[in-house]
Structure formats: structure tokens, C-alpha cells
Amino acid sequence: MELGKVHLNLKTVLLTMMMFKWGIFCTASSDKCLSAPCHNGATCVDNMDDYACLCAKDGVRFMGKNCDELYDACSFAPCEDCSSTPGETEYHCICPDGLAGDNCTEEVDECESNPCSEPRSLCVDQLNGYFCRCPPGSEDRTAGHT
Ligand SMILES: [Ca+2]
Image (tube, rainbow, N blue to C red; front, side, top):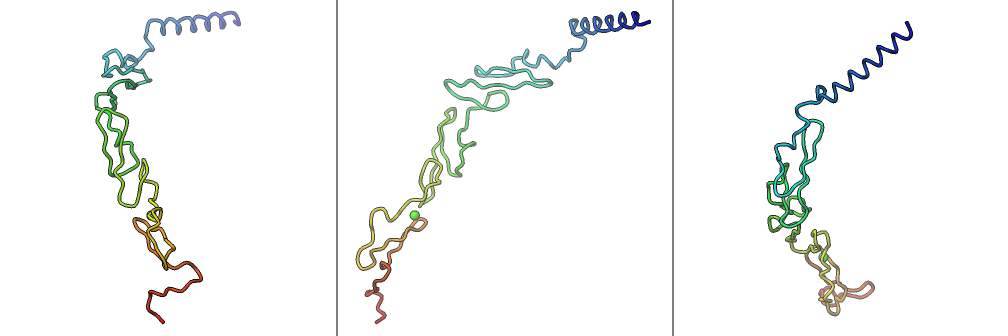
């Protein structure tokens, strides 16, 4: 009784192994890469029931599921006004007035050029501008309120 059970289990294991070997348990979709869906030198990676294309990283760059669209760096850029050359990874943000930096995140210091003069010598930086005021403790003699 005990011996027969072990024998049956061994047969089941062997049969299962053979079925894998014959490809009975393999799904037809496991060879998605055979049709070479990836373009422009991309590498195809088989998933369970799909494929993924790893686009080539040298030369002209591509994107999209099949790496058949020219890379658009601006679609990943954090700025609204952007320019780029299709196929290249660099982008250029066109910043609104008063902002600067690669991603337009830096505020321009309009006071940097020391635009204020006596008596309103204190420059106060604003977004896209500045104003001049008197230093604390001094009187504004040009304001006309005497
Ligand atoms: Ca500013």
C-alpha cells in the first residue's frame, strides 16, 4: 500500500516533467519576441504574457512600446515651455520672466545689479522685479510727507 503510493507519486512527477519538456504547459504567448517587435536596435524582453522593448542607448534615441518613436525629451521635462531635438535626450526649458535655471526653478535676483540708489538704497527682490526702499531707521525724504 505504502510502496504503491510512492510509486504513483514518482510517476506523476515524471509525467509532469515530461509535459513541461514537450511544451504542453508552455503558453503560446511566451515567445512574443520571436516576431521581433522591437525596432531601432532595441532589446526584446519576454514577459509572462507580453514583451518589453529596452530601447538602444547609443546614437539617435527612441521611445515608445516598440522603440519606434523618436525620443521626445520634453515629454519628461518638468517645465511647460520646452524645446528639444527629437531623438536626443537633452531639453531646454524656456523660462518665464523672473525665473531661471535648467528647470526654471530658480528665482532671478533682480537686486543683484544693485539697481537702487540713495536714499532708497535698500533693494527688495520680487518675482520678476524689485523695489527700492529706505534702509530701516532712515527717513524717506523724497516721499514728500513733511
Ligand atoms: Ca526676483
